[in-house]
View 1 (cartoon, rainbow, N blue to C red):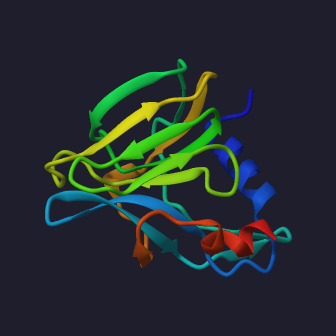
View 2 (tube, rainbow, N blue to C red):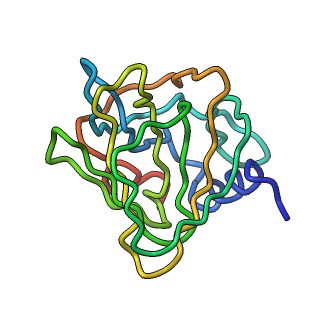
Length: 168
C-alpha cells in the first residue's frame, strides 16, 4: 500500500497541467478569533520531471480516515494545521457564526487546508458527512504548524473558476 504522501502527490499530479500558475485551495482560516472560509493561492510551483510541483510543507503523522455515512461531528478544531483531501464520499463544513459553507467531494476541489486550531479560533468549524457511502479522507498534519506561503484570493471557498488551470 502506498504511503499517504505518495498518494497525495499522485492525486495532485492527475489534476495538474504544466500550464498551471498556482495551486488554489479552500481554507478554513481565522480572522479575529473566528473561523472563516477563504480561497488561498499557495506558493508558485516548481518544475520537475515534466510536472508542476507545489510546495505544501513538511508533514508528520499523515493518515487516512474512514468515516461512516451520515456521521455528524459537530464543532471541531484540528490538533494541528493540516491539509485534507477527500478520496471518496462527501464532507460538509459550515461555520458557527457565518452562512459560509462548503461541500467537498473527490475532484478538482477536493483539497482543504484547515488552520483554525483551538488556540487561534474561538468558534472552530462544524463538520458532517452527509453522504450515503463511507468517506475516506487523507489528512496531512503540517510539521511545526507552519502556515504555507499564500495569497488570499477571496472570502468563501474556492470554486471551479479558481482551479481552472488545474482542471484543463
